[in-house]
Image (cartoon, rainbow, N blue to C red; front, top):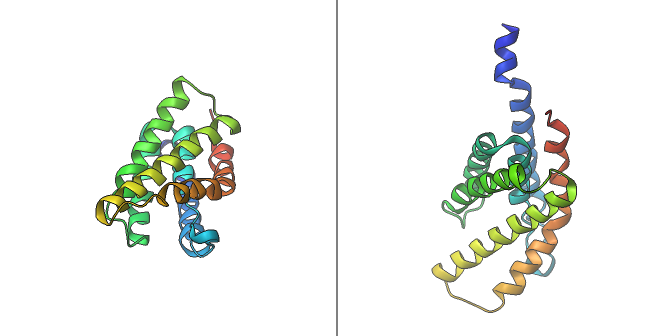
Length: 165
């Protein structure tokens, strides 16, 4: 029985479920209310990148799919954007971390900046398609990426601590 539970790895599943809950609560309830210059911090892509980097392609993509599903339910302006985007970010991060970069903090921050920028661009394109294009979207997206960096740095330490190679 112990061998069966070891293969299921219930403890790691519960750790990532708690991590997902905490990330969603902080994103939707706390940091969505702090809006300097009208920009909301979005650190969910960084959390997805961290899990993809440390857990691999399939577990990271499953985590990202569930997180994207809940994020799309939490943010009313999204339909399925995060559900599609987050697994792609996680899978790409996993691929890059397996073959091209190490799993250290600096490499993670580079990947997190790219993930935050891709998410900001997708949000910007979605707004431009649905509503209208405005030149102010570009500095707003850049400020969203910059405003999200401290929280992206904090998102690294949960998965980095739980990994066992």
